[in-house]
Image (cartoon, rainbow, N blue to C red):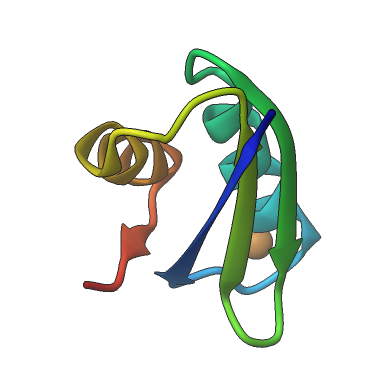
Length: 69
Ligand SMILES: [Cu+2]
């Protein structure tokens, strides 16, 4: 059983940004998959258990971007 959470991340401009966000999100516990759409900023995260939104926000900020509320 897994959960998919969708976020919108601002500030990503290229594949390097996508890789940075993806890597940070994979560092969160239980994350099984990350799919980033660069054009829209849409980020889908598949995880074993529901994610802590604050932890997601911090991870994205560590990569240098922002999660839109
Ligand atoms: Cu970039």
